[in-house]
Image (tube, rainbow, N blue to C red; front, top):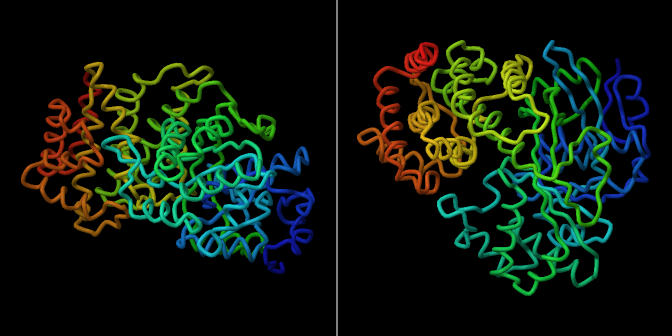
Length: 497
């Protein structure tokens, strides 16, 4: 089998091996600008748009991908060389692979090289939607206050250098200003990040910046920009060298950056698109009036579940999520946490079978073919903890309900943040606040509750005596007996109740 480099010219020959776009990509225009073209976007939004183009030939809803940061140079280069094409490899639970070349990304821009081109593209009247996957930490939110961080040096830079912004807020502000000046019409800004109320947060953060930098824009935005909330769900581990090699060996496709993912997929969106939208419901997207209950479910079960398994698994010495969750003790701990502490706070999930979802979740985590790396799952935990775990603590406290499992996970994170697992092996920690968290983790060794003084993470929750006592008890137990013995005992206590 001849190896073929993935690009437009090889699509016809590749069609005999894998599914490829059957639509004419030259006729597709970019009605959507997406900022943050990583693996998750390519396994999710870009896949849905590709299916829409395939099924309905609605050629005005292609994607222009934007690489916002210098760090994104590699993915930009790959997409440019491959004409925006990449292979989506779905790893089924039985180990089989479903391969498909995705063609919905028809343009791509590298913001650091040409900020003006990105601003003009966002302001183009053909663009009706701007979507975002900029990670939880990209929203410049002060977790302690819930407000926009105006002291961020990059934010100050953007306010003083409008034509050469560095943050998403600088780009969006200048693009909206240009849309107003050129009468380009309204636009929807849609966050696809794992933040509860992501549309509300996006609007609040952007308007906070604009109030500071371009206050004359505020009235126009209120009438011409919508910010729907959304919930997205698909496990997408980082692509590794073996994925690239396997695709080449099995299909003869030379793809520099394929995307691997699980078969499960879900996208729930509030139907609030001020400038129109593609008929994504025809390819499985669910449009609702209120996405909040679904967001809360996903963040509290899947995202928090990942944090639970990743943190505990890392301390025990596992390197992948499937290894950790198939450890019977960690698996039972996760199930108990979801049942006892998360499920009681979930309401108004019309049409959702929570029991079935939780069972499916465990199976998804257990997929031995996904091999989701724990250090990826545990990256930026300082931003994830306030969004995935601590809201459950807060709600459980309001109802005087149990918080033992959540408190234990927070305590495990404090121990994890010292940088070693229980085998005394170094943990690969990736976190923007790594140095600060490490300092508080060191203080916790002599006074566990000192860790909760990390205001950027815990905010006012650190003042809760019930939570701080539960945290301190869990911390001392972990240090004295080790994670494994502790979770065995906690699981036993649930069974005996």
